Length: 292
Image 1: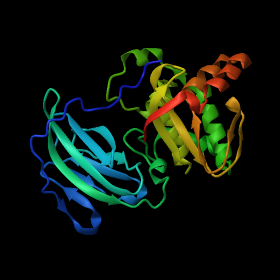
Image 2: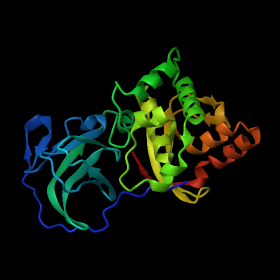
Image 3: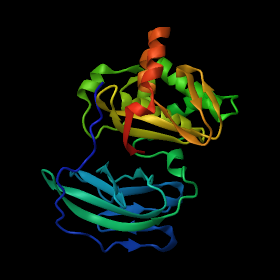
Image 4: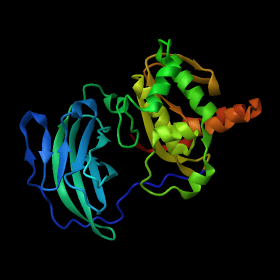
């Protein structure tokens, strides 16, 4: 299994700082000379950022809180990208960078915003750059179809998980060629019925979030697979068993779910393989690095 390459800035050379951003009152929209940061929905767990004009240059966003730091790409088409505020309440430093040459970047805008989430799980209930969907997405329509008539979160998790591991196959060729900065296109994954671990985790998070079920896309290290990997953590107030992989949900806790590994076992149609897989999907074999 191909690992997901960490999104990092190898060398960041700060040539100048555009700290003269303007704030437009309660709207919480900060406009610099070249970029705009919209924090008006910060209580819902996300911010939107765009470069004001199209450019051929590479753009980066860094979001920091305390010692935690997340680095993202920003599109250069003058359109908004959405980023999660997944580090809890408090002060966030948000910076936009423009590439000059090689690995040298210049700061174009830096702002500090105070975040007070309306719910601690709010960032894991909305779309963002890595889990990108709308109400009109085919992926979300499929989630609606799968969960029709199901009232409990537990039943919805079960049917969505079952669909993903039964229908999406691991794409070995894509794993060999995927490049740093790759972002899943959920409807394309749904249409092709194949993907890499990043795709599995993204489509599952989107489907669950659309059903008001908190879900994280998590990246980190899998000691079983010996690779950088992606999986999900899912939250529910309910308790009970998921038939597949014999997973027990204890209410009010996050549960690790790895649909990538589970799909290979389910599609093998082998009870023995399924039993072995149950032992592999254990949190002790996973080391989290980032969550989205």
